[in-house]
Length: 388
Image (cartoon, rainbow, N blue to C red; front, side, top):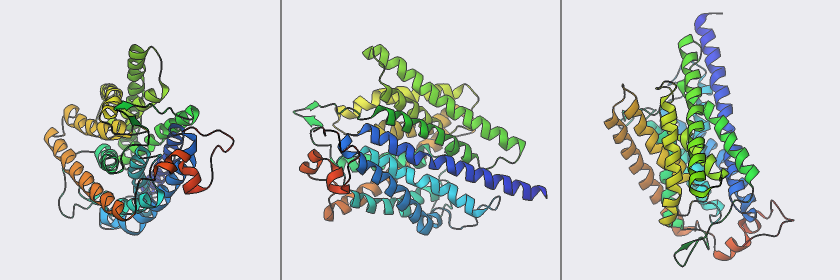
């Protein structure tokens, strides 16, 4: 077999394998969110995750991919269909970040409309000016797999949505924060580890090739650094929660791991084996302090997505400029600011407009009864007594 053909085949298989790992993040988000919400809203969360994967992927196929890259033939080193599928695997994650943070009070149809616009236009435009065609301009920010392009974009969209939709009924009463406990911790753990595994395709696949010794080493280093940052995030939060509460909060520890994974996503291929420990540990610390900070601001985020994805998306992008000698910190800051403005303003405008003719927020009675009965007609746990 010709060497170029061999590389083409191997890199195509690599892209398809990485895509498959990323798709494992679909049940990862679904299980994490299903475990963190109350039992009366679990079916709705699962329905929303199914909708996001289906609708976002379809819209990216029809419209978004060409908006982002301008052509189906922008990468000729592997099958163009594999290139598309790898990029398609990313798009739903942006909306997943947003949907989890507005769960338990959000209607499905308006969220579906927002998913269409985000996956066909908003996210592809952000890809265009970062990884893609650069039709209008191109940012010099280095972001390997999307600390800013994906995670912060989803985080900014979530912040816009929360500001418009508001908190869950009963979350903040008389100036006090009511803690709403997770309903299924085993599902939370399963979801978090599915996300963790998916991250190896997320970051490793973004290296782009594996068919040479140099590329194989780069992929292996990227995956190792990704895992290391997740470990560091989990361990530092494990220590912090015990020191503060003398207990081990598994939900916070797992969010610490996810924060470390988000933080390393921008530059997992740029560092040796020790720097990711620092980046991931700082990511975990940021999650630990950001969660109560958003609560104090009365920003209701049931899954901690702002703390994990927005805060650490920003930190991870800055970290590349701080720790990588060949990346400009100024360019990283410019990229963060430009993407943040575009993502927040466009998401706010779209959600505000949709909300004018089709309310995102369900009424208080539906929230009390549970979204599953009203929106889906199927309860995940019909034999359980539903909590208020």
